[in-house]
Image (cartoon, rainbow, N blue to C red; front, side):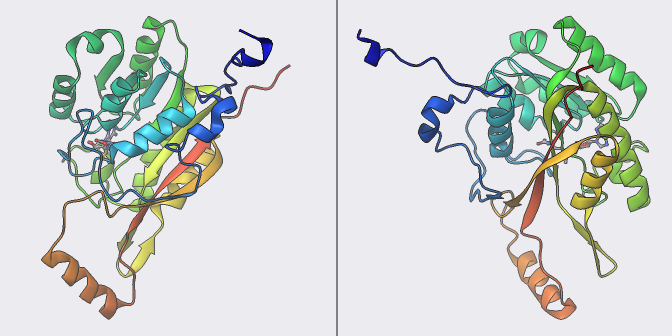
Length: 281
Ligand SMILES: C[S@@+](CC[C@H](N)C(=O)[O-])C[C@H]1O[C@@H](n2cnc3c(N)ncnc32)[C@H](O)[C@@H]1O
């Protein structure tokens, strides 16, 4: 092979496997701040089996952009396990925490058993509790790691969907302030568990209450800033591909919007944050 034909070694950054020598070939990786997904991906074991799960494409985009193969994703609101399935599909490892025991069992059933031991660890617990932090650290230590390399936070959108009656469920708190305080406590745990210099994503939408828009997305972002995260990007994602058709209900919402002077939510946010790298002494 002549010198001219020698393939260049891949040129990658610290946080993903994207070969920048071939940057034109990555049409699948989004770099715009508006994400339009007309349909939920149904391949790779994914299904709309949980009211409130995000579409798998969110995990695909974030994991490809912010992790390398075999790195560890931490999801502190695992839900029905969309990020766990996508970690399997993309050969990442994952530690997930979910409050509802029946959901933990359900997600474990979806993961190939041999991977549950070796690459996907699913814990039941309240992500705000110090005991949960310690349990995640134990899982990381079993992989000889101190930190996860990416953090996913997809909390309840306050009380829009009530996930359980448990007092430690963020969808079950009696005020937005209480929700934000609990969210901040969980974000702080995530901050401690994330490797310095690495990224986190907050996935959340806003809500209306008593005729007023409650900007949960920006307020949660601000709570993450308070515990030390810096904001990298605010992505607006079309939610129309998320859900089953609402039929007659959508007419009702349109009537209410026209009558009440407001706009029907068609978007949510994916807010990308990072934990600053440790300063060299
Ligand atoms: C929006 S859903 C996450 C959905 C998930 N991303 C998926 O795709 O399936 C939020 C989840 O957070 C859980 N949750 C609420 N409070 C929690 C807490 N304190 N600790 C851990 N999980 C909690 C709820 O049970 C619910 O399953």
